[in-house]
Amino acid sequence: MATKKQRFVTVKVIVDEAQLRKLKRYLGTKNDSETIQQLIDDRLGAEEIIAAAERIRKRGTWVDTYGRTTQQEELSRPSS
Image (cartoon, rainbow, N blue to C red; front, side, top):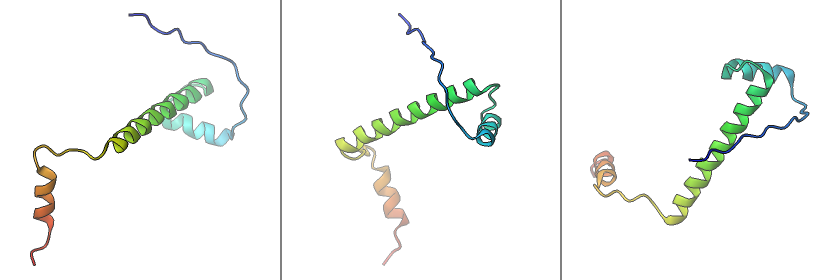
């Protein structure tokens, strides 16, 4: 299976230094480039998840083939 060759570019970015340091600590990254690359990867992953959820939403609702949701709703309703 062929793999995509990663191509990197050098860009100049203006960011808040304190926020970048804080983010580096949270992510456990060693340098600014690694931090920004991880942010980009995380955001792209989040966008893929959002797009998948939107496709599911457009198809309709989840189908509960075993009826578990209905049973739970009936159990949680107060008796009249």
